[in-house]
Every structure is written in C-alpha cells, then in structure tokens.
Image (cartoon, rainbow, N blue to C red; front, side, top):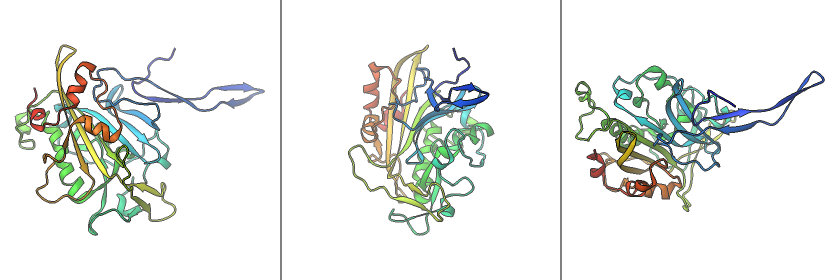
Length: 320
C-alpha cells in the first residue's frame, strides 16, 4: 500500500528484476491519484489527456491544476482558486523555467526570452509592430509570495498571446476582475476599486482554444527562426476563454452557486472594447459546447445545470 501521495498527481514507475547481477527493467507505466470532491475548480478528465497534474506551492497545498497537450505544447485548461490572501502583495517578476514533469521537447523554447527571439509568425492577423508574449494562464499577480509566483513562471503555464491590445489590454482587464471579487482590505482598494460583491473563494478555469468542437478554423503556427529550436512549430490559439464560479455554503454543504464565462477571439482589440461587452459574456454551458470540456464537474448535479446556464454578468457580479 502506497502512502504519502499527493492529490491529483501523475506518478511514473517501472518494475525491475536482478538476473545474474544485472538489472532488467520493464516498461514505464503511470497512474494518477484523484482529487478531493471539494476542489470545485477542476474540470472532469476523460483519460485521453496527454498530461494532467497539479503544481503544489509547498507540501500538499495546491497552487493550480492544468491539462497539457503535447501536440499543442500548451495547457488546454488551467484551474485554480483565488482568495484575498493570494493577491494582497505587490507583483514580483520571476524567471521562466521548464516544468520538470514534462519532457522539454513538449515545452516551447521561450524560457530565456519571449517569442520574437526564437519564433516568427505568418498568416495570423497581427500588426507589424506587435508581438506574441508568454501569456500566463494563471496570472502571476494572482499569487503573492516568491514560491507561489515562481510556479506561475513554468513553461507549461504559458501560451502565445498577442501582447498589445490583448494580453496587455482586454485580457489583462479580465484578469484584474478576478482579483476584484476577493479583495476586501480597504488598504488595497486603490488597486481594486470595484462594486463587485466579494467572495471568500473564487474558482477559476482558463484556457486557449484552437478549434471549436465541430469547427474548421485555420490554426496558424509560430515557426522557429532556426532548425535548432524545439519544438519547431507552435500553434497559435484562435480564442481564449475564462470561467468563474462563486458558491455559498452552510458548513460543508453548497447551498447555492453562480457561474459566468468569457469567450474572446484572439486578436487585437480597439480602445473602448471591454470584456464586459455582451458579445464576450457567455454561459459556462456555451463554453463547454465550444471546447468539449466538462467544467466545474465537482458541483452537485442538483445545481450544476442551472449554475452553468447563467449568462448574466450582473447576476454573477452581485451574487452573495
């Protein structure tokens, strides 16, 4: 009986025998541990994913979970919780590094510098003076201390995002909204001046989308500037999405909940376009239909469908 295993973690092992003083090894095999049912941020897994795992802050305290695609060299979703204690310190930048659980050839070669150094694009609509950034899936500003923040700077937590007028604009504003839901400290309100109804915990899932379910969108690629760059081809997402969940509990029992989603085409946005524009606000059910994921799968069945059908930003913003 194994003990001391981490929740929601993939383990690798292989058997061996000693024959005539020599070691003979079997094939590498894997198994994954499950997550507690109160990890409400987690989407369901199907067993077909290339890699699903959790990054732990220290010990057994989770930072975030993610589902990774070897063919895309990117996470397909990243799930995490957000509390006021996570976001009160000022941001500190960290150094990008490889995820040791994933082979380097499946991680984009942008640890030392961003995409313009090693990769170039063609076909994808972008201004000549713009560039692709290493877009965090869980933002570094959502984690305050150096250990937590450093774990957001591993390459399995980034995807190529248009910097100007997307990552540094409308998407950044949406990320700031995450933090507005949990900040109550009056000394920090200058950074998060909001009329949002706060919650103790905000559950968040975010990710890229290359093609919608049943869609035939063209997927453009970034290409290595030299043949030595591995991986040489990196697909560019056509969309980015994000979903939020708030719950109201009595003890350990969920009494009610509310969820909302956002769906943004990956492009340059004009000044004045906001994530709160009705065209970008979607129900979780709609985002599930486009992505094929079963989001917030640990919600009780009795309330999941109603919660995930909401498409009113005002209803979510004021839910308590």
